[in-house]
Image 1 (cartoon, rainbow, N blue to C red):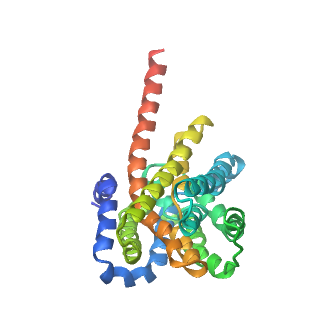
Image 2 (cartoon, one colour; image 1 turned 180 degrees about the vertical axis):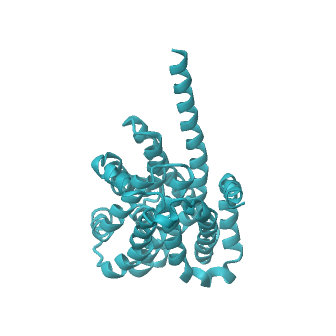
Image 3 (cartoon, helix red, strand yellow; image 1 turned 90 degrees about the vertical axis):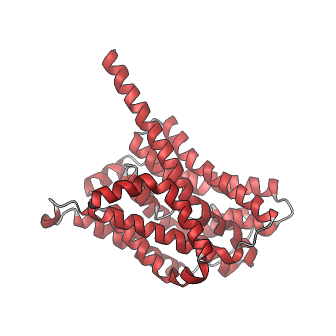
Length: 322
């Protein structure tokens, strides 16, 4: 029954994620206070997604680090440059919007990407290493990038940021990996049992994050234009991971990992930086990312997964014929 529910949830992801966004916006007054639970739900999703990642696979990913370096290059170099160029091109007289766009794409990859990689049968070991390395580099990369692109120096509360990310990522990941080596659990499908609950957790996170976004989303044409730009840049991030992964002839599971890790962002980190160090309008582009990235993940996950599977089937048929 659990597996059947999980399969139905996976098929419905492209439709359920935008519904959760809409639900969060409509019920923002009621569920906004639940934001304190989000880090714990993130931790559970990380734990559930890390089960099945074995030390041997992590070692293999470390020995072949090209996908990790490529993803970090997309996240911390390509995407900030694209945001910087489009920001100055489309909003030349709006400094705060430009800063918001840049912050939205210098923050580390999203923790939730681990779950999407797991859903679409990506390489969880590669994805986990990308998340861990990018997270550990974040306290150093973010201030440097802001100084480079914006000319602003900020002193991030490194210990607070690291402790929160440690709680959401490192500890749950280690626990998830450790569960693989407990003899009693070896014959049990712990990952499959937790899978539908992690998806429900994702729906909860999407709804709550959308409810937090609601107060700053008063509709006007400028907001619509910023939303369209965020949508386009985020789409570029997802596509870059796939295109460059194909160009470098990575395996399909690695390309799936690059798809999600290159496209998703840790919005909560970006929103915190914007609120603490900049005027309120800077947070608008970052908050808009909350509304799009899960829906984009569901859409691109389905499309790219089907495309890669079809290409693999075509190649197998070609080999049989020849």
